[in-house]
Length: 195
Length: 207
Image: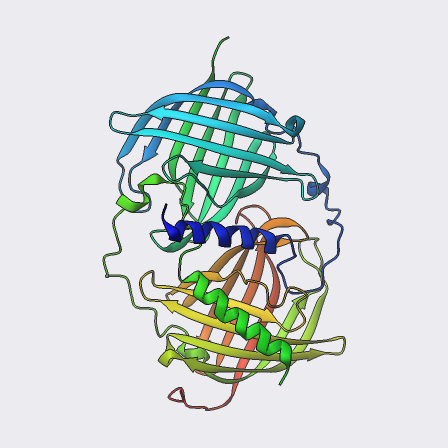
């Protein structure tokens, strides 16, 4: 295992611990602000995702390079409840003509901030990534984070949309200009597996 | 000299050491390693913060509360002194302002990454209850004389995007804004504005 990765993980955990303290430097109040958008309980917003799915994935081969070469994968996704629904664990297996892709995603709801986090690990490195954090509004979920891509800090957006009982769509996009423009690089269309 | 400052600086430096290994090694795209590397044609931004070297009179307007629709601004006045580090590839700013109701003493370390052509900006407030903890850097760059820097932080427990903008840069003045976004960068609320005027023509040659 790459020691840098380990160090990275260690610092991620430190950072997470740190994040549990308020980051901004000015006096903080413990209770969350009572803005109307913050009151809504989003605990069940990911319920649609439970179950077994067929997934069709398009992945941009070289994000943020101007390339338009997409790789196609097909596979399965199984999502199980954690903590009676306040969390969930997703397992993804997909194959393309030259690639095998195996991932897992942990989804956790924070009832204090009313935000979901989505943390992904690829079996290639077995390491949890940076969580994307956000919420659902009008049936559409958007989760965001900041990551390093080719060494540069960029913004990352995950969007859950087109949600019906038996299908939905997930898209990941990168922004290299602070969210002014987004380039999708991973698009999954999911269809429920009939029992 | 304030001991907290010492501690703050120490941790800033630790954080820097840490950040030199990208803390986000865990890109979600397994293709990262295959992606094309930078071509070297990007402009060198190493001197983009040179304008900031020197001594400044600062006027700060700070929004009283954030992301709650507040329209109340608190006005501060003070000074800021920025010194070159590593012959300009980094700089250190000491910031001190006062209002009738408060005193802000801050420290900013800015470091240029010649590989990514991005600046990282670390800010510490001497009264921060988390002073000495690892600091999240703002990261970004200048384009056409305007600098934009971003990170993701917690505000009252919620994850938000934070943006710095440097603009209106002349030899003797500059404008700075901090904004928060609670919707992934679609809308931004400005909560901290500084306008600065050079007090002394301190040479930017000073090291």
